[in-house]
Image (cartoon, rainbow, N blue to C red; front, side, top):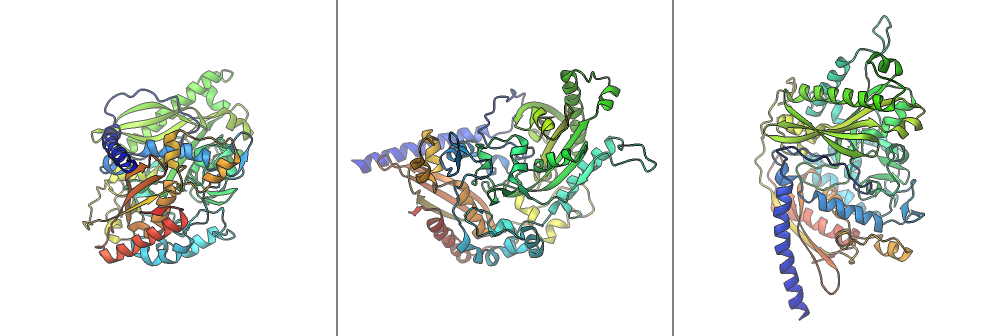
Length: 541
């Protein structure tokens, strides 16, 4: 009878899942008309930093970008509340330490990574010297470090600094627009200081205080969990956004600056998601003299904010035209912890609406905390990969990391007037893996049950090792490197009696440079299975 009930439950679940998948697919379609402002956003959603969204008009986005985004983030938010081992007060994470939900994982796999992924731009494709220099003094075997060898190998690559690389090309268009749109600061004989200070050189290794606390991101925010952020130690992380340098530069007295760099986030795996991507951030603060010259009443905070908002939107619309031409645009109210008010700019490009960037008026508390009094200004941020994928018709985000000359020769000396011609037609190789999670308190089941209680230490201790899908994604990528094209959840099922949850994932392997053999993929998949069982506490089916 129990078996029959379980079978019936599973059949019903699969039918509901199919309907939900259809609904999610429709929900993921690009907007084609005016959209209601989204102003009510909880602090306990994942960090929506500038430039984190993915392109809605990329050709592969509708089917490849992961229509489970909303559900995944909802589960992540709930999971973060049940997986903390460091707590302060009523169930909040310590500001100095991330939620400790990761044990030392993937260590047994690291020796295999270089051999399995070197040809595909994996762990051994970067400059070992650059990576080693940046990570000098950090112990990647620490139990509270979740930076894998694959991620460590990406430090120092600096794609945004490589001449003729499409990311560098997009960055240069943005820099040229802003440095030419405003006069230089000062009136010295040499023209004064540049209108915008340009910074491409900052290390991606930052204190968590600068990455989170200085930007008013609360201690219990899900973005601070070890399932979302790469930590070298409890107080040091790989930056999750270039906004991590904002308060440092404001304290130096800079009024105008642009910052570009590589940023790191643990995320799902598909054609438009990658754990390393690149952002450009811009900030402009206004002096009283500038405001008075513009006819603003400096004694009125409302007048100042209105002027700054108008200047921000006009400038960003001009930047969008510099990149995409004369396109239709619209503004959407948004929420970011570090700007108030906050907005997103969307453009109508090639028949679809696409989010381009996030922006807003710098939060008054941030301005006061850096010693700038009542000064006001704006900030924006955008993802270079997002724009480059759309501008150049690049179908897979992994291509930006390739060293294949067939990719790079298409962009050499051609600016932004390039349409990428795919050169790879190699087939994918699919492998499925199914397993039971260790308990009913996995990230998915905890969220679905709405159970995020941290009222007692026993709950925290039993869920410390709860399964989180980002941990699985990280393990798969660490094994397969850039051979991994996509990881997709095909099915999940909760047993009606035991409460245990079963997950079935499909791992898609594809090389952009050669055909793969079934034998080599079988070997990689076996390491994925071994690693999941050994390091994630799951029971293979």
